[in-house]
Length: 264
Image (cartoon, rainbow, N blue to C red; front, top):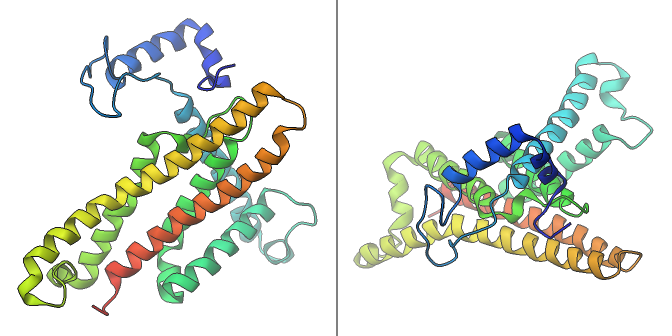
């Protein structure tokens, strides 16, 4: 199994799947034979695969399952809604994860904004964390090692930041781009716009680069010596998974908090 091959690629043995893959590759792929023949910089011909889409759907299924189990326990009420199960399961994991996310958000955004933006930041954290984590399983590639997935997440943060900034300040939101010195306002505006446009690029490329590198390292050691030796790198991979989830979500919290802040 190659580095870019996942278990989902074995679906190609079915003719109906080959037809779907061929059609999507024509419209979504790049290079010769596709509907997008242009190339430039890093956007050259690539190995087209829907593996990251399947992993993303699998992550969404896991998140929905864990959320549904927790919601079901709370809805039943009584002791089941307060006391977590004795055995470690999806509900326990989701409770611990949500509690850690909430505590981190309170320290960055404050209690009021945390309650408002927990669904957004929590959903991002769950998706990124489980996507990264599934990438450590041989035969699965993390959905977050592709630019398409990460750019979609980063653009969500970008548009949410400015939407809530405008909603909070109205047209006064533009003052955040002008700086404190009126004479330098035109220059500061250009610099701020460039800086804000660079945010989704840096968010997406940072996450993609770290997860692609981590996936490559784990794959190399599994190929060379598949027994015991890859274990330390898997443990390091878990640390990378946690750190990259934390970095992405922390930056999202900071961007939104700055957009809503009145201290400018």
